[in-house]
Each structure stands twice: as C-alpha cells, then as structure tokens.
Length: 531
Image 1 (cartoon, rainbow, N blue to C red):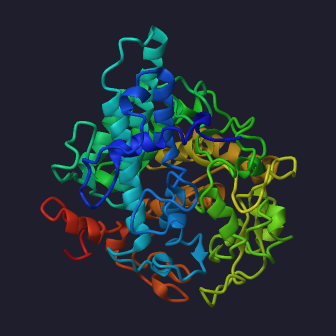
Image 2 (image 1 turned 90 degrees about the vertical axis):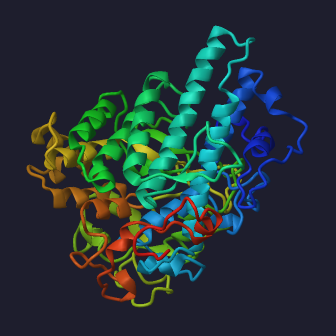
Image 3 (image 1 turned 30 degrees about the vertical axis):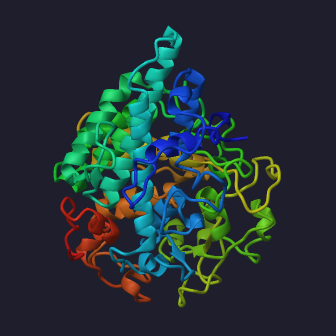
C-alpha cells in the first residue's frame, strides 16, 4: 500500500482549520474539530502526521474522498494537482490532444485560453493551497516543544526542510506557468492583509535561496522514506530551475545546471533497468531511479485526478485488449491521445522502432481530423495500473495505484547534456553523450541506438522520447523558443487542423480574473491578457 506515512486523513481537519483557503476572506473561523493544533504538534508522531497533510495536498482533492475538494469553483474530480498540472503542460503541445469538451479543455488544446479558464484557475489555486498548508505547518513548528528529545528535534528539522521544499516546488510551478503570482510565507499575516505580487525574477531568487538554505537540513540522498524529499530532490529542482533560468530572468545559469544535475547523478540513484516498470502500479518497489514521486493508492487516496486520470483518460474499451489489460476494469474514459509529431519522433513508423519507449504507443491512425473523436490519433499507454509481474493491485477498478515521478534520474542526464550544449562550464560533451547513451541503451536493450554526436535539436527530441507524458513538454518548447510563433507548428496549434502561429503572450498563463478581482490593488495581469 502506498499512502502518506500510513495516516494521511487523521490530521486533515486540524490543518484545514488553521489554513482554510477561501476567496471569502473568512479565515478567522474556529476549527470545528475537537483536536487542536497544540495537541497535534505536542508529539513528533503528531507532527509527522501534519507533515503528511502537506505532502497529501499533492494527491488528495479533499478530506472526504473522491467527491470532495479543498477548492471552490471547480469540479472535485478535476481539482487534483497532477491532473491540472498535466493538462496545462501537455494539452497545449505537440504531444497530446483531448477529445473532451469539458470547460477549459478546448482552450488548452488550441492555445486560446483566457483569464477565466476553469482548469488554469484551479491549478493556480491548488498551488496556492499547498503553499498555504506548508506555511501553516512552518508556523506551527516554529517553536520546538520542550518535551522533544534530541532525536525528535532532528526529525523536526527534517520535517520543516521538507515543508519548505514543497513550498519552493509549488512556487517554481507558479513561476514557470504564471510568472508573477501573489506571495506569502509563514510570516505573512493571514486574512487581514492581501498578499503582494512578486515579480518572476524575484521569485526565481527566492526559490533558489530556499533550496540552498534547506539543503543541509534534508536527509541524505536515498535515505528518506519513500515519497519524501531528500537532498537529491533539492538538487534536482535546482538543476531544473537553473536550466530554465534564462526564460525566468533573462540571465542564463547553465553552469549551475551542470553543477546540480551532476550532484544528483553522483548521489547514488541509478536507472531502472526496465523503462516500463517506472510507470506501473508497483513502481514504489525496488525503484532506484525515481527521486521523488506523488504517491497514489487505489484504496487509500481515491480521486479522479493523478494517475487515475492518466490511465483512464488514455484508453477506452477498444484500446488494445480493453481496460482490464491496463488495470482499470471499471475504467476507460477515452479522452487523450498523441498528436502526430510525437510518435514520429521514433521514426515514420514507430512500430518498427527498436526503441522500447515506443512500445508504449498503440495504433496506426496518426492524423486527427476531428478533435473530439478519440478513435483518431496514436494512443499512449505509458501509465498503467498493473504490477510488474502482470497482476492487478488489490481491488483494482477505476482508481489507480501508480505513483507519478516528479523527479527521476533520467531527467538529470538530459539537463546535464543540454546545459553543456548551451555553453555551461564544468561539464564536457563527451560525458554528456555518455549520459544520453545510457538512456538509449536502456531503451534499445543494447548499444545499437548509441549516438556519437548531439546537438540541441536532438536533445529536445530525446527529452520527448524519454519524458513524454510526464508534464515537461510545454516548458521544454518555451525554453527552445518553439511554443508560440510560427517557427514550429503542429496539428491543431492555434485551433487549425494543420496548425498556425500563436501570440507570444501564451508563453505565460494569465493570472485568474477571480484573483485580480479579489486583490485589485496588489495584482497586475500578465501582458496581453487585458487588465
């Protein structure tokens, strides 16, 4: 079973009582539960349960199962962080297209969203919600109880560093997608003063400084419990931050990207021998590659987002051998499939490729002439709710037990290689090529796919082949200058079958209109979206 430290639900009501996120500004309510924060944080066990809620905000939508949500104004089933984040990172790109007409989906498919897009607003609020929960944890643990032993105090130090890491991660997401969000930390006044907006470059500096500050207080690489952040996760986020620094600030940090990706590479993690196993229901077992994941359990963390969404939305009853073969005998929603450029990265006919990563694709109909017809397009079955031995998890139905990797070692090899090619110092091209060939040798099963030279275009394509459907593509295309404009178009970009240019404003999502209305004195809309 994979759930947050065994006791995610115990603490939910207490933390919500302290940190209720609401547009009503009624944040001074007395918690209705009988357990106070003083009780919870008086023991290291209770404090750990509170930390579980900080992590749990990644995977759970609310406190009472799949029908509940922490957020107002969005269907509970779509309010999970990963489902919202994945849609924002994949649907506007050349990798994915969704057949559904649900509010917000067509706009993401076509890169035509506004500041009222339901899914973007939900993602923005979900990120802020998890930041709010992390801030509450940090406020509540600012003073160490006198009853804590030395070992308890050491644990508390780790807990606080992990909470700051999660907060930094969510600020990175907001910076990457929305640019200039409102900012709060544990020292902010709650419910009385509206938060100030922070500029993107300033937020970059904050995230960088936080990640560096907490590094010594995090557990050494590979030594934390599964699903909790360690120093390698910290370095991995720094490497990702630095790779995109020129987009965020106008100043490159490719040398820093090399430094921190190499720290991860040398930290003891290793590639899983079987690429497919990284995306199965028992990927929490004997997995040497995943550095930090969002953990899902089909019995303990039920909701219609996360990997439940990724598995069910990518298949229907006619896909392959049907939903049962993908571990969701009660599922199969028929929504998401690949746009034609992606499978062709494995060759004009991906089915003849020796690259085993292409084996997680199905079908022969590359072209999508009707965006609402799921039968059109190559299907992607990368994530499945089956175990590595072919069995199904206990009580397999619609809900999925496959964990989602937020950071894995393969990304760090790709960061190192790209940063070297972009002129970062401290690395070398020969080493970069060797790292790329490690990925390709796993994919091919031998050295037949090895390369002797690489360039930036190759890296962009290799990132797609290795990291597809892991919520990287929008960020990658922006970094390469190919997301907006006309230098690269793909089917249905801009709403046309053959694709068309879109305005540069779409490199950032808009600040939600609802937040601008609630905080007009402090928030300014991103350029191109009006006031």
